Image (cartoon, protein in one colour):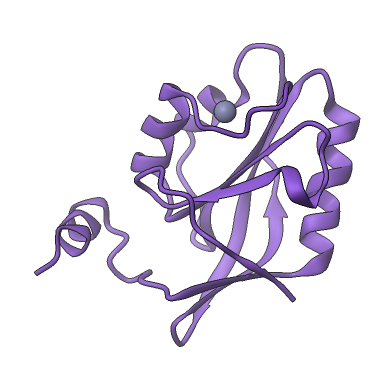
Length: 142
Ligand SMILES: [Zn+2]
């Protein structure tokens, strides 16, 4: 058994093994718009999705009661249980680095299987996607 699979069992994410990630065009546009509107604050949302064969399909954003904060949006979500259809998260970074912080990595490891960070200038090219372990992974826009 691969380490990834063992960790998946522990984290309860073993049912979400995916080969590819497909994200609906509208979701990407929404992420870009909200990141711009929220600036200079961070925004954070959960990603709504489901498995279709080997593909993880992301179809929408799930907003939490307070989705904008000056002091680390991710930490607010940390305490929230993920809803049934939530497969991960997206949040914005003021600044040009879309690399996960230590707090982000803790969060990625504990909740969901697919996470996105959008940095300035908030366009398609400034979005990075990560797996639970903080590895950069690809996605397709559909
Ligand atoms: Zn972050």
